[in-house]
Structures are given as C-alpha cells and as structure tokens.
Length: 318
Figure 1 (cartoon, one colour):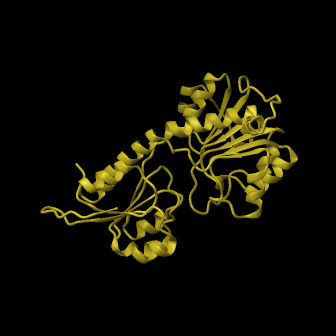
Figure 2 (cartoon, rainbow, N blue to C red):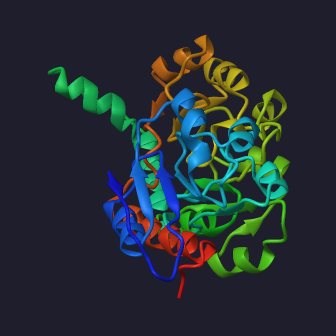
Figure 3 (cartoon, rainbow, N blue to C red):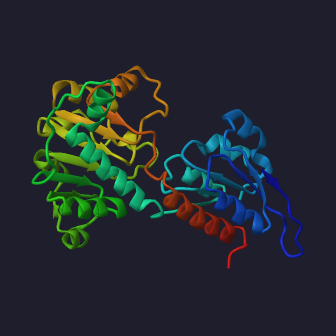
C-alpha cells in the first residue's frame, strides 16, 4: 500500500510499516498526509536497503531494530512499536542518534490478562491433552487440579500482573507478589502478599511471569530458582521467553519440578534450537504463537495510541 499526499503546510513524511497492523493505523497516518508504505513481510536484507528512505518506521515483534539497522536509517526520526514491549528495539542506540521511540503501553492489558488466565486453567485441567485425545476418538477421562485454594505467585506486578491477580482472587486463589520496585500499595489494593522472589518460588503452586527485560539482561529463572520451587509447579509465561533459562526449564520439566509450562512466547519464533524443539514437543508444554495482544479490541487500541504518538513526534499531532 502506497499513499502520497501534497500539503501546503507540512513536508511529506515517509513511513514504512514492516509488520501486520490494524488497518485503522494505516488509514489514520494516510489521512494525516503521510506517505505510507505497508510491507509486513519485508526481510532483513530488504529492510536494510530501503530504511534510509523513511522518516518513520512502524514495527511489531517480528522486526528487530538494532544498531546495524539504525546506522542505515540516516533519515529516520521515529521508531513506533505497535505494541507494549521494546526488547526488539535498541533504544539506547536510537537515543544516541536522536531517533524517538514510541509505543502503546497498556493497550493490550486486558487481552494478555485473559490469555494468561486461560493458559492457567488449561494447564491445571490439562485441556490441550484432553482436546487432542477426544478429537482422536478417545473419550477417556483424566484428572487435573482446581485453581481454587491454590497459591499463585505473580512475578512482575505492573498493569498485567496486578490485573491477573485480581482475576485469580475471584477464582479463590491466594496471591503472592514480587517486583523489583516497591509494590506494597498496589498489592494491598488487590489483596496480594508481597514476598521476595525466593519465598514466592518456594510457596507458589502456580507462577505467572509478567516482567520486562532490557537487552542483555540475564534470565530471571535458572537452575537455582527451579530448585527452589515445589515439585509439580505450573509455570505460565506471557511476557518474555528470555526471562527463563530454556535449557534449565527443560531439565526442570523432565525432573518433575515444573509440572507444566504454558507460554505465549518463545526464544526464537519459530523455534530453531534443538532444546527449543524438544520443549515445543514435550507433552507437559503448551505453546501459543505470541497472541497475547492478538484480539480485535487490543489491536484497535494499539493502532489508535501508536498513530497518535507517531503523528505527535512528526509534528502532526493535535
């Protein structure tokens, strides 16, 4: 899609969109007089060749905006992440080059919370296995566990983690909370007990990860942390795959420390390392293809917030 507009008041800024986005975002940018190229399947080499022609770049999680790409983006003024995470963008390098980075915090909170609770229930009741066995014609009952009365440990108590806690409380779960910042006020509001990470890992039946990571940060959960957990712990991850040491996780699943791992994020998407493929195929692992924000409602909110922020940075905001 290519739109060009002449304007008496503005220079015509060129925008490249390299990942699938809601049509509302494209329409809004075009109506504001921007020239928009929509190429949601562009490869790395192709992007490196053309990025110097654009004033703004709109990406999601597929496109990595690293130092090499930014060094070619001599005209770039803004990188807009149509989502909530910035781990695929070298923000430090962008700042050095005076390139503004904008994103859409909070836009997908409800969608991610709902997926998290869905994965939690599915893991507790072993629904994926039940679906597959029943579709194969084997109407055999198997037992799972109730979440009611269990202890949920929420690691990362921001917008998503705190709201997951609220829903879990309505299911009758006891909630423990950990974050690197002081969360006592928020935890008190939702009825969660603040714990250090070690105690949370030792006491929780279910652990849900909602953490942000900076480039180069080590995993939050490794062999040492898995050894602290109860045997059979259910681990949910709808934040960042890199928060978990994948090889250590595989060993924890094999040993029975982790009873089930349900995740919406993977280290490589799609997986390519041998240990990733083993995890993907393991019967005690359930994986969704990074769909936490993939609802019609969330995508529309993301589009609205991203468009507004991008236009503001290009001097088109109101």
